[in-house]
Amino acid sequence: MAEVVGGFLMPHLPAIPSAGFGADPAQVATVYKAFEQISERIGELEADTVIIIGDDHYENFGPHCIPSCLIVTGDVDLSAHAQTLGMEGGPIANNEPLARHILETGYAEGIDWAFAKSLGVDHSVGVPYHMSVKKHAGVRVIPIFLNCVVAPLIGNRRAHEVGQSMLRAVRSWPENERVVVFGTGGISHWVGGPGMGHVNVEFDHRILDMIEKGDVEGLIELPDDTVLAEAGNGALELKNWICALGMLPNAKAETMAYEPIPEWVTGCGFTQLDVAA
Amino acid sequence: MMSISAMEKALWQIYQNPADTERFGADAQAYVKDFNLDELECSMLVSFDSMAMISHGANPLLVMMAFQTAMGMERFPEYFATVNGMAGDAPAA
Figure 1 (cartoon, rainbow over the protein chains, first blue to last red):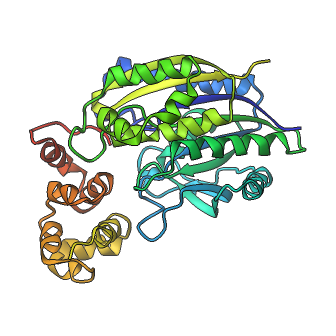
Figure 2: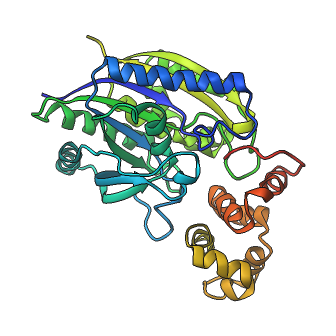
């Protein structure tokens, strides 16, 4: 019987693999240590599969087709752009049977999944994979993409429902799988427009505190306009976190690290989500 | 007539299709004629007026990525300064 054994919330910045752009080495070290801790926990949890929830940055999904939520059910590789960021391309093992089961479970429950039989994933999945999963031979990855980038976006409530549906799918999968969930992105950052480079430390701590207190409903109720005004368009990636939290009800959340890194234009927050024994 | 969708299509193709990046770089005036854009929008794209396009409603992330692709990362400090109305260094995006 499959089960979700743990989860993590983390940034997915394209600058992370190269540690470039003049970021303070002490801050970079904190970020790298957090990813290393996540990697170690994946080993301790004896994970078989990691579900990585990210958002395509107007890269694979252009004006011709913008899915609200998409699951990759087949071949996974890094996108051409992701391979320019200090990450090596090549096949990434997908848990195809479980991905297909998540898709079909969602269909039966009214989740309007799009799916990809083959995808070169962008940095939102590629960076967390590269930093924390890649070294674990045999651990497979299921990439999930929510539309947090091109308006109209997926709603917070729907993102949470997608996570809840994925949890039910995992729990109904008859194989023995130990699944870890990554919610990636955020926290505050303004990408490409006015305000770029600013980090709202107060907002970021407020979000991390809400997660530690288990206030998922409060996160869901945060209007997009409020997030946009206080924390920038990049903070809308909190939808990925909300989706992950949907897979981890009643998890004990603990902030692992937080660094506001202006050179990376982002407040980088990490949370560990422990499943009650 | 304004068309944000057509503008984003033109920007996305600059970002994602090397042949279109090259075409835009070689002759931006000719490139924009392939899209359903009005005169003002054509002008914004040809001059790559980032703030004008963002103010017009184009997705800021897409404008930035198209700029990086068309102009090169070495000119990113210029983009950063423009959108912030100031001189600045080039952080990651």
